[in-house]
Every structure is written in structure tokens, then in C-alpha cells.
Image 1: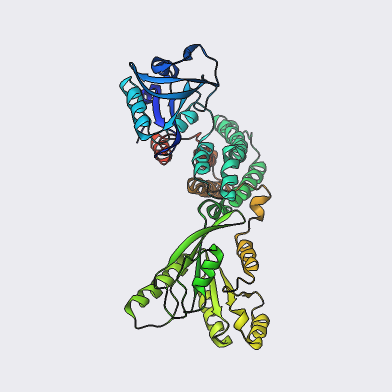
Image 2 (image 1 turned 135 degrees about the vertical axis):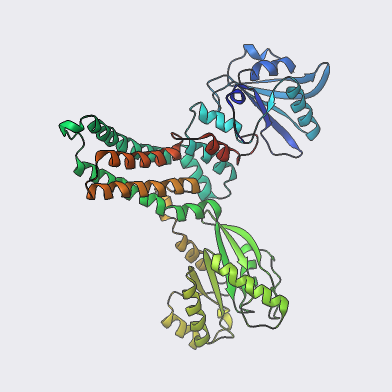
Length: 460
């Protein structure tokens, strides 16, 4: 999908509310003729003579035929989301009414909007930068407190301001070095190499912190895939049901009841966790159960966190230690969860507390110490950095650009170490500026914009 200059001059229209029957629907128009063309089919006040940010009651008519009674909101350029003339028509939520209104405007020359076209026009008209535009989509799709806060902070320009400040500092030194190229025969130094090194090292530290924050940002934005694993009858399905507070998984005393994985989401501390109940890990000759065990092992390798359950009523310390060694070799963060504490012998509890003091003791069946387990889960996510207001990278495109920026800055330092000529230094600094500019949209291509905005919904 691409947007030509002619496309940007069109008046566009789209349904801004979800498809389906509802109490109301909002149809949005944007473009030079948005108010004019709406006025041609609206029976009420003359919209072209009304003030911006006002709402008017009337009817939308196709000739003499009344389609619906509506409320029309008008926003006169540049005081609108797109900085163009914008009209929002609130109709009743009938799909028939929506289609009739859309078809009426299309017959009058209004073009159906492409995905993200409203937000793209806002970006192109300088309403906000590209990182803020992407945050609009993140805000719409936010399904937890933390993802909402991260998107809102980015949309308000917190991340953009930090990137712009880094870029401004580099631009100053780049211009000084470029100036030196004009005076190469006079051997004049406008930019101190020691000051440049100090600046690059300072920017590099900030960039690396932003890169490291992506792991947390990814958790905030996409949730934490958390596998509940263990031997058959360890209480995995019981724990899933207890965490969800509903009977999601079948619970039985028969070993091997769960043969495929079952998953659902809950919010803990403002973060979405996707808990996945898996087949019990054991040797089996049952073909179907063996497939389930294999899938469990694959899920464990790709999880962000594993809750490994031990059945305290039916295990010993040797077996527990063997399982812990396997988990450590897997390289995935895990919590040792000792279940059925109400049925355990005191000696194994004491042994576990001595050898593995980080073990969490619960009774999933009695819902005992589930809050303690939830607290430990949240500790591993480490939201403290996010809650103290630090900038967090949540977008994989930004992460990629920051990684390339780091490589360019390291090349600048290597160049300083090897006393390379100014033209090579300038080239590496320009590369760093290019990748930082990609984040905020100061450096863009039509393909990049098309790729970003194609992921938006039609009416945004």
C-alpha cells in the first residue's frame, strides 16, 4: 500500500467504530471538502457557517430519502486530528444505515480511507512524529494497565524527546567536522576529538539502556508467555483454574489427563500473562500423550517464564534436584513451585527450604499462598524501571534502529582510536543520525510509511 500526492489531496471516509451492530456508529471524513460535502447531504444547520468543535443535530438524506437522524461534529483545519477539515457523523449502529451513508458519500466523490490513512495525514501535516503515530495504534490495542501507560507516554512524546535530544547533540558535532573538511589544507580543528569521544560514549550509554529496555517493553506490550509444567498429577490444571478463578482445564486424578496445552490470559500488576497448562512430563507409550509431552517441551523452550510444579505428596528430593538441573540447562527463567503443601511430609518441606530457599510453597487445590506466587512472578518481570518513569522501548522497529545506531557509534569510537580522516568520521556520524531519524520519522521512505500505517485499522 502506498499513498500518492493525489491521494493526500482527496477527502476520505471510513467507519471509525468497530464493525457490527451497536447503539451508535461514528463515520469519519477528512480532507479539504469534508465539511462542504457533508453539508450537501445534511439537513439541519448550514455546516459551512458553523464554528469548529461544534455538534449539530439533523438528518442525512439521499435526495428526499431520510437515511438516519444523526449528530455531526465538525473540526475546521488546522484544529483537528489530521490538521485537515474533519467531520464525524454519529449514526445509529445499524449495518444497513452505515453502508447507506458510506455509499452516499462515495457516490459524491469521497474516497474510502486506506488503513491508517487518518493517522498518516496527521503525521504528514506535523501533528506528531512517527514514533508518536505508532503509539496511537499501540494505545488502541493496549489490553493492560502497563501497555496503556507505555503507549500513552510514547504518544505524548516522551520517547521522541529523548531521541531528538541525542540527535541534536550529534548534529552539532557532525556540522563542525563537516566544516573542517572545507578547511582541510589549513589543518583547522573546529570539533575537539576528546569532546566528541565523550559525547559519543555518553550517547552510547543511553542508546544501550534503551536497547536493554526492549525486553521489558516487549513484555509490557505483548504479555508474558508463562508455561505451567511438571510431572503428571502435579496439579498444573488445578493451578491454572485457581489463577483464572474458573474451571478452564479438566482436573482429574488420572495421570495424563491434559494431552495438549490449554492457555488463557490474566492481568497481574497491570501486566498480561498468558498462562499455558501443558501435558505432564513423563515417559509414555501412549502415542497421543507422547505428542502432548513433546509439545510441552517445545513450549518450555520458547516461554518467557516457567512455573515448574513439584507434587510434594508424591516425590522425593533426588527427583526434584534432577528436574531442577534440567530446567537450569534449558536457559529459561523458572520458578520452583512446590504444590500440595497440605499433603506433604514435614521432612521434605524442610529439605527443600534448606537446599532451595527460593521455592514457593502452595496448595493449588486450597488456593493457599497464590498471592505469594503472583508476587514472585511479578518480581521476575521487574516493572520498577517502568514505574519510575524511565523510557521503555516497546516497538521492534525502534529496537532495530537503535541497534544500528549503536553499531554506527561504535564505528565512530573505532575511528577515533585509529585516527581516521574527517570524511570517515563524518560518514559514521551521519549513519547514526540516519538511524535515529528513522525512529521519529525525520528520515523516511514511502515503503517505510506504507508498512507502518498498513497495520492500523481503517478508521484510524
